[in-house]
Structure formats: structure tokens, C-alpha cells
Length: 442
Image 1 (cartoon, rainbow, N blue to C red):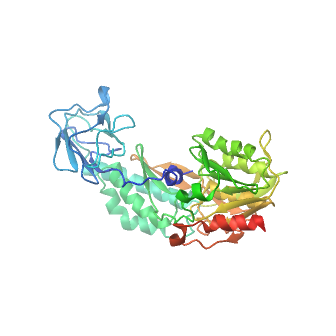
Image 2 (image 1 turned 45 degrees about the vertical axis):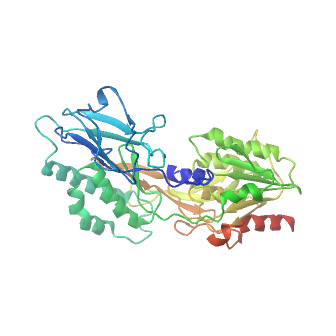
Image 3 (image 1 turned 135 degrees about the vertical axis):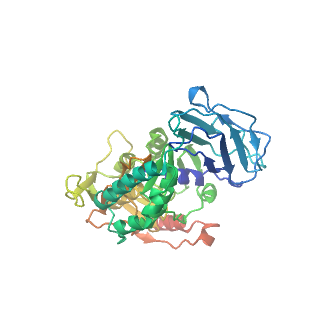
């Protein structure tokens, strides 16, 4: 699943009270740039806010670190200038701050978000690549992108966009792009029209989002420690609690496949609630992750295999067509805690991707009632497409469906019991959790 959605869920539990930390908004050269003029004498870094000009952390070393040619200076309170002496045909790497060295700070003392920069210079005597060279490279990349959108993008027809026409209208701007990052910026703006959060652009080690439509949560995480008795954090993404009348609570903020040990705490919580008369599973701030982890947890609530969803993949051997519709089944989890009492799952507009699959799993288990709001309707199993000019585009490769074969992309999954939770109400109360408790206590 998208790292940015996992980070959103975890961020909401950080209870941050201060303003956003500073970020790099412009770098020359930028991360992923190729054919950089070896005669370039300065690296320029611009932040989004005023900085403390008394400190800095320019991280790196060895042959890949750009040789500093003179005193580093601040042009103004937002832009630092690093004089360098570059060589042709050379790959360079540096980072503005990192996890250990964080001395680029704003005037409030907050460290800037680390920003790595990797770039490659052009050949000796050539300077940067000629306009003709770049246009030829970019033209081939446009054709590759057009082919991928036309034959390998599983939701290409969902919004009725004419991708061939859109690429033609933007062709000149794309061909004139002077770097992979500049090309990527145009592509990311173009692909935003797909309104698909599983479409994104990569340049080097950095990722560019396309469609931006932040969901409005139907939960205020800061209220949970007051609303749930014994509320405790048992891993970075798993929380639990219990009411005196025997209703247990488990909150899983992500199915993060890069840290499965953190998700393992969900099983620990279920072990500890083995004698609860009912359990509420709260995934309202969970944007997805690894579906196999979601399957393992959902398997604790079922007695036999359950068909929970279907999907079909783009057929690589037959461009523009799809393969057969495939069943997706969740199996009972062995050597895991089992819970056979009533279960309520709390859902809402933040839920997407693999967490939507979890909602379908729990809806398919007869004991689970889903309460809250409709999910985002975004599930794509994205695959990379290298455009050959330093830019990679990720596009969904499947069409996800519910157990009846209905696609829910852009539509979402409705709860069994819908609860109105406008933002102004969520700021001071938790109507979704209240509805779940009322349902279980009837």
C-alpha cells in the first residue's frame, strides 16, 4: 500500500500540536536530475519558511559527495547556496538533514524534513544535454506512457478520459522538460485527472503524488484515550482498551507490511481480550498496507473459508483486455487467537486499499457488523512502468470487486450502519464509537 497513507494514519496518532516542520520546496539541481551541467558552480536549496541561518547539516561523504568550493552562504532566510566544483560523468549524492544530523532548523528550532538529492552530470565538453537530445528522450518517454495508459492501466476507462488527446495537448511541455523531475511534475499534474490515489510518479528516490483529495476522518484520535477505558498503545500502530461491561476495543492504524512486528500486536490484543463478551475493531484511520496481514487478523474471527472479494488483472498478452475474474478467499487463522463473540468494525472515509479488503473480509464474516461511513473506493495493486528518461509511473494493474463482482473503485464500501459524523461534531465527540457501543448493548 501507499506509504503516504500509512504515514497519514500514524501521524494522526502522534498528537502533534506544533506547526509543520520546514521542508525543501526547490533544489537546483534536484533529486533525480541527469545531464546536469558539470560547470554548475552552485547548489541552491530553498525552504518553505524562514530558517535559522546559524546551523546546517549537509550530509554525505566519499567520492559521491559534491566537493565544496567556497564558503556556504545564505542568500536570504529561506535559500542556502552551496558553492561546488563538479566533474563530468559523475554521480553525486547529498542530503539536507537526515535522521541523525538535523541542524537545518526554522526560527522556532524545528528540524527540516530530510531531503536527499542524487544527480548525475553530463559528459566532458558537453555541458548539459542539448535540447534535441532531451526532446528525443522525452518523446520516447511520452510514447511509452501512452502505451501504458492505453493497455496496462486497469481503470483507464473509469473517468472517461481520452488519454491520447491529453498527452497530445501536453506533448510540447513534456518534450521541453529539462530534467526527469521537471518531466515528472508535468506528468503528475496530467495524471491527477484520473482521480486515482494508486497512480503516482517516481523520480530517483522521491515520489510525486498525483490526485490530492485528503479524506475528512470520522474520528478524532485525541479523544480515544478518554472515550475508551484503559486505552493503551501496545505498538506504534495498535491500541486497545476495555469497558467494564466486557466490551473490548482494538485499534489497528495500518497493515504496515514493512513492520509486521507492529501489526503482530493486534493478535496480542485479541489474546488479552479472549474473555470479552464483544470486540470493537477500529480501523477508521487505517489507509491500507499488506493485505496478507489483514487476512491473518480477519482469519481470527471466522470458522471456515469465506469468499470476500473478486478481481481481474490487465492481460499483458492482450493489451487493453483483462484476464478471468478471480476469487479472493480468507482462511481461518491457525495458531492464532480465536474470537467467536459479537464483532463490530468501525470504518470511514480514510479507509482505502488493503484496508477496504479487510472491511470486505469482516463483512463476509456473519458475526461482524460494520459501523461508520463509506470507504474511499481506491484499490489498484499498482505496478511500475519505466519511461526510460529517469521517470517511473505506477499504475493500477487490477480491478477490485466485492464478493458479488461489483467494482467499488471511486464508489467505496458502505457500512451496515451509517453514522453521521460531521467534522464539527467529531472535534468534541465520537458518534461512531457511541453507535457501536449502543449496538452491542442492545
